[in-house]
Image (cartoon, rainbow, N blue to C red):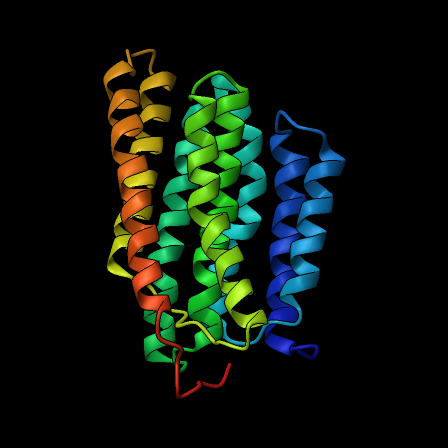
Amino acid sequence: MKLNRVGAVSGAVYLALGLAWVWLAQPPAPAWVLVAWFVVVAGIEAFIPGEANQVTLARAHLAAPALAYSVSPGHLGLLAVVLAVAGLTDLVDGTIARRFDRPSTFGGGMDPVVDGVLLGAVAVGLALGGSFPFWLALVIVARYALPALGGLVLISLHRRPELRHTLAGQVSTSLIIVLVGGICLFRFFGQDATNVVIGAEVVIPIATIATFFHLAWVARRPVVATEPG
């Protein structure tokens, strides 16, 4: 890839917003770590084309406030707000891709990776803060990390996997967002979240396994025609 003007401008805007958030909100995390994350993501973003992809990458930037707020039980309400904003970008990027850009293989592959970065940060942060079972956080991380690694293996074997959303993947991501967001809200308002946590312990692993099976089925056949982007 080469330096892209749209990506560079978007990265600069997100970086400015991130720095403003660190300065004004004084989040419960080391400022230099948060700033470093924004700088790294903005640097990568400068090489990624497409307006829809820039909206998708907003969720990568949001991983920093998500992690900062998830570690601190007193900020779980703000974490729920971050997840709501992230969910909005997930709706908007697809609309932009269909209306203004041509949906691309690259964009389809990047979307679940970015989701994994955000939701993995939330799950690990909640586990470190004592609001979430650590083993379940590892399941959520594996939900996104293993398909990404599998895609890399297929590419290394000169097979190009079909990079697109699957129904099982979309359902599992939606369930993770709803259940994790629900746990955050229950904890924030001082309510008993036991039933929500139990539901998450049952539903998330099942949805993850279903996603793996569906991805394995789709990955059996390589894509014949390639798309630009």
